[in-house]
Image (tube, rainbow, N blue to C red; front, side, top):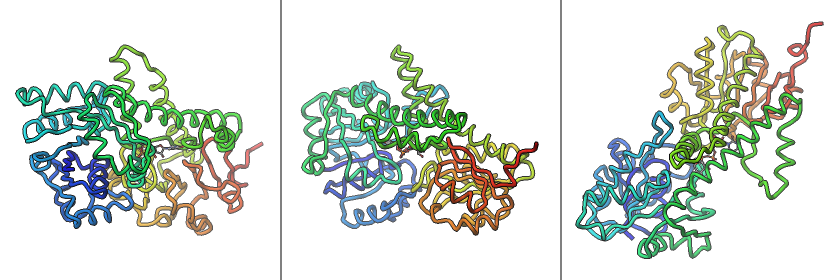
Length: 446
Ligand code: UDX
């Protein structure tokens, strides 16, 4: 099938590459000409494991192309995915201007019968708006256009695996023609037995926010328990272990730590709460999830302050700057919120990240970026682990202990083994577990 994709961000670009991989002819378009030039040369504009290889492979197969001219992507397409950004407005509401503009452009340029698919996360009710935008542009031709909702559930860092082997594909539509076209585009996955769910438009739109809200709820629930464990001298990782073994609760998203960041959860929670209010329902639970998530950052800052007393003359190493491992995305990254607050309080902050050094520096020029974790830690009075990249599990801790000014580690993701850290002479402050203070450091005056 000929497919057009508008917007080549994390969702759009993965959609382009994976649909091309299964045999469709895909043209991705973006208004960012620099990004398109990079993509035409086979370079993705962001880091995602396996993506460079996949894009290069599909470009040379001839099934994938990129253009800065939206018309080129949509003219002959039988299906057009809209995967543009939906940034939050000050009120928390999603700003859907780019979605509306994309729909208008599709209506202007699409020549044949086509399905316009919402891939961006949008509030329920957007499909109706999409159809209105198309109708206003091409009133005489509205019968040629169908609208579908096909939310994307992929995770950054695992995006290709998630797209190639999804746990479900969700499609909302209101005509057999649209459902049939969607089944055709997803035929590869349907034949593999992937769970394929068809609903009406509003249901599909709502299900995406519902999923992200619930996942964020699990994270905030365990983080609230972490605050409780800190007060009760209990261990949240063991509490989580006990909870996980109950299949009704589930194994995942019970890691206490600095909380969630990224381009989805923070924004989607706000947008979902706003949408609920608009629909006349006070879904205050969603606001509580956000509040608890913010508290996780505050709790971490409290630990740093507790360990260091005054910050003005301190050098603090932050390792892991992206919002989660295996990405260079620093949008709503807790590490950067912490860095900002530390800088405001006069500390010198040196960061290291395997991939996100450049994006972090662009976002917060006040931080120094070190080329490796050891240079970040050298002469540091405290090291804060903000993102649990695999590489940090193999750090030479003895060396770290030697080069640091004070042997203080705040473990924002419970990635270090407290027993080992204690043995090596560190004072370690984990999340939701009792701190272990090196003998001298922990001595309480009588
Ligand atoms: C999320 C959803 O998982 C995905 O389905 C949706 O389409 C987009 O949003 P993503 O933001 O890429 O994906 O990352 P995810 O792996 O879900 O992690 C989100 C955040 O939660 C990260 O900051 C992560 O560090 C944090 N997290 C996750 C925790 O703090 N604890 C956990 O137990 C799990």
